[in-house]
Length: 156
Image 1 (tube, rainbow, N blue to C red):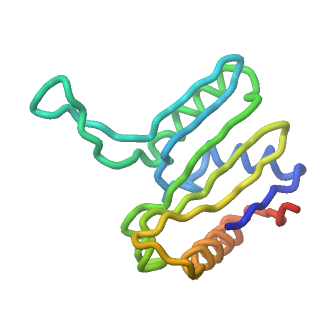
Image 2 (image 1 turned 180 degrees about the vertical axis):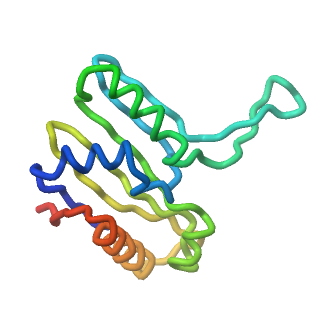
């Protein structure tokens, strides 16, 4: 797991890019919590109605690309958010390319007090004490940050 923080001088630019550009569009979103005078919670589960009209069937997760315009509209029309938490997950077919034991790969983002923190997490298909899954995901995220010009430093 990595825990990194963005330089406060780059937060405004990053948040603008996050909401307007495709820098994290390759991710799915498990959930969003935002405080903007009131708490807004978005569950990233996609659902469809089953044949029995009273039941919903999970169909995976929405993408950041699909949610980004909605969050941008909410933020644009209201006050500056006090807090935003987003649980990103890398698409399932991409996860197995990063490591064969990857069931899910997470990138958690928290914006609060004009600071952005990221942490990574993994879920394994089969239990293992060895850490190559975590190491592979952490390295992949660091490369992504570098490619997308997202400057972060390790948190103490």
